[in-house]
Length: 475
Image (cartoon, rainbow, N blue to C red; front, side, top):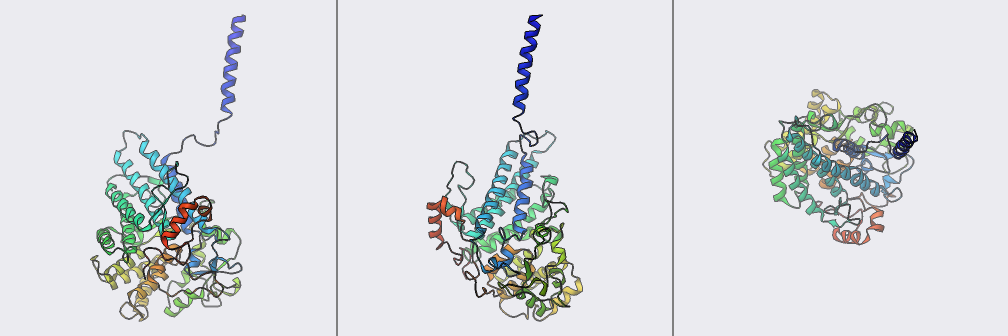
């Protein structure tokens, strides 16, 4: 009997020890995260960062002078320091996007999938992860110039060196070519874990080639040979309609709503109005997109003065549709592709078609995307101020102005294209901290924690200043 009691006691002791150990486990969080879920989260973090208008994170609509502030005008006057905006942009893209994408790729590469799943599916997933990393790095280069790249995601290097921006960009193009070659449209990929294309590999091939077109055109003034080769290779495989747009359709439930709904509606704040800069241009052109971009004020469209305090009740507002919880966030669209092709023709690149045809296609794609009719497209394109053969200026002014109008809800791309084309003419407000920025300054955290590498990068680009033009901005 004593022996039985002793055995039971020992059993109970070991059982209780096991249960005590269980108390140290977090049963609410999974012990292992799948590569697919990390990919999904990274995609959303990326889209949220590019779409939102929270002045702590994204001020690109202000830089493009689409919107201006009503009461607190610091960001419209290019104060990037008070809210450490460059730090936040940098952190989201490196920490929440690139790091998660990198880990996603590592996990997917080592995951053993069911024997019933083709190994090509894994190959497609890894190529798509790579494409998303390339896109994110391209945004960082276009924002800052030289950036940590070759050492950026190495956990053993706490103070990464900065790589030359042009070298990085050309390497990204090489990586993009390799990723495209790995994509097989005959097999699947992420399925519903893919926020942009629901695993449609053929759609990813179009997206990757459209990226290649865009990146090639950005290099046109600094490395024409590389630019031309990339553009000609990509052109037959790019977006061909608005159906191809790279967009995340948000849900109506928090925290997965359109970030603009969170910033403009749920916040209960009235911080922004559209500017007279864009409204006056569109009024002059009788642009049919106005009711989709803005609300009316006393029967017409009236914009606020950029960089100045503006009474929210005295001007047009951002259109209701843009603020809806389920309104999609877009990082690339067909209209942009057609504008790129129009420019390519003007530069003598053999992409097919005429500059006028591509220009007309771009404008039609923009107007119909927002809800305009084919009759409105025809009327608009017949306007002598819009028609490619009669609009004022050279091709950079004609394409640059219409592209600026089409990119209205895509502030980062609008700012980048304005820096490339120098049209339309944007002027800093009278009390601005600087002229219209040509880049973000490097994060303050980099200056203090990674000083030696920061100083080298600053010297290499010509000074860590918003006025410093980046390597591709030659004119």
